[in-house]
Image 1 (cartoon, rainbow, N blue to C red):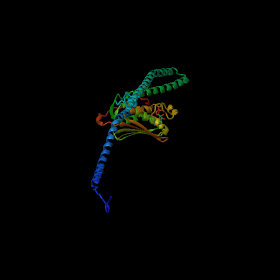
Image 2 (cartoon, helix red, strand yellow; image 1 turned 180 degrees about the vertical axis):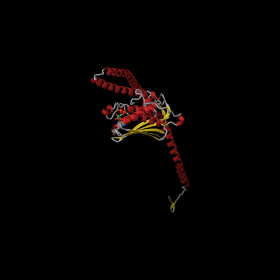
Image 3 (tube, helix red, strand yellow; image 1 turned 90 degrees about the horizontal axis):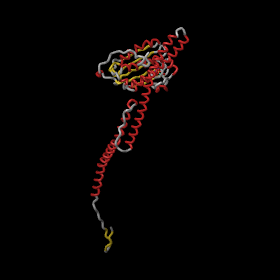
Length: 352
Ligand code: ADP
């Protein structure tokens, strides 16, 4: 700094060390480098923990909702006591489930009552018609007409039996007699019992099995599943074709496949074949005595056993139904070796 003085101008220079400032800046940088990750970590994990805690009631509701099925609509979603929109939402959903449950129960009761009430008059009608047909001996035209009415009554009786079986399955009655038994053996005996039917149509049935396949369930009902699948395979396969029934244990599951070389199912119809009363070719199915209930019975029984059924098909090449059931551990119980006859008319919708 220039300072005027006597005889000229003095220049004054003043200096100070920058070391304390530099050291402060260095300390600050160090604190930033150490503290920033810590602050970031604490805030991120804190946010994560808080959001997890906030969403925990939602997760519980989602888990309960996933477990609700048509067969256990009696369950309800948990209601978090938070006093906010979440509590109101779960209360509203629970009220909706109650209304749905009531509607389904009403439907089920109606189906069970209607099919039960229809069985007796149909049996009486069948009996009366048979007597009239006998009395009309010597009148071929009348006999023929009574015969065709009898056929329709029998078809109706089969549909009613199918609906009755479905209503019992919906009500969970199918789980009455659970045993551990060999699915491979059941498949082999059923195929053998149905081989006559196949022979009549010029179709070869073969049974392939890779050893014992223990399953736990209602043997009679599972036999009905095999009968329905084999009956369809025989029905929709032209003369000279073949049907293969295969059992195996894969990835902890008991698998049963029924494959045929028949007419196949169009791709557009595949997602609907397990629907009640669905038939691809109504005229053909009706002519064969089908009403579109057999596969819905298969699905209902498989679901009641905790399994699943799927279908693969190619038109004019063939169809394959895949059944997967939970495999029982042989220690669950001694295998039940008793063999059962084909399901009776009242038990099996498709039994012949
Ligand atoms: P249906 O008594 O009419 O046979 P299902 O419920 O058993 O009724 O089968 C539904 C429909 O699925 C049948 O009408 C038929 O068109 C088709 N379908 C079932 N199984 C087969 C098969 N193995 N091959 C071809 N079509 C099949």
